[in-house]
Length: 389
Image (cartoon, rainbow, N blue to C red):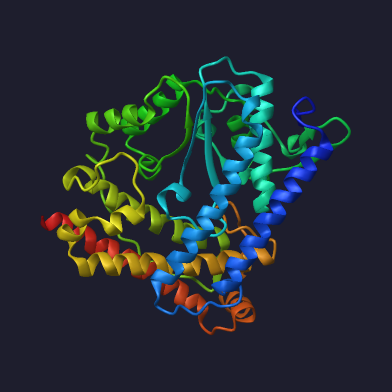
């Protein structure tokens, strides 16, 4: 059990009024967007990627507004000087409707229980509005080694409590995520540790997809975070031992949910790594942080690959995200998370029937698989062009 005493921050009534009002506004805008773009009832790919991109941009902005408002509400309970930033799919523009949130708080002031409680209140509030479990929000420090104090947690420890003046809010995280999630709460927050963590990625040549997309919400510290990341990139060649492996996926008669998620996720990572590889080779970006939208609009990449290839890559990417969203929304309706930690198994026929029942579209599972393999094929052709040049 982990208790976070927030009674000195805000009363229970004020908090519940605030979060209920924020969620109500978000739900109203979300439902309006879903209706305009026919998100929940249709799985017909109309080959209009611009239309789905428009929806994704508006929905991403809506989610970001919620994150910003919650941070603003409780910012005064964190250290005066903070680096607060996002990373992950929302900053890469590879996000889906149900994407996790990757949010980091970093400060050099001594870590305290008060700061820990403030962070947890922010994390819980964001997850509550988006109707996510608490393990759907991550910070960079979560990926640090587990200390001996928390390496033997079991399901009986899986209880979080936000303690207010007159009431408490209790919640849990996914059982397989408990240790990792607690370490994200309990670990260090200092800047040197943060940079050392990024340096380790270059040393080990791993997690390339987590390096190059950053959205800074606040940097009131003296540290030049983006400048330090750029130095690490310039001083290292993280791709010196990288080899692209072409994957063609197949859904067997018995399909585990984790395998579906891996097929989607690994494909996106492969595409992002290919574009990242060209940061030095083509020098297509005049800033550190990048999005896939930047890549698709880059004149240098269009010249390198050809406009036809970039257009086809973009269309394949958006089509796969479209189907990823549909699959995730369906599973959510059945209280199943599309996660690499979910080992629920469906028969191929059963899953196809479920998709048809929700979207009234035949052979959706085949179409989903085709979209995954089509994007992998485009990535393969991209590496062929790179190697030829």
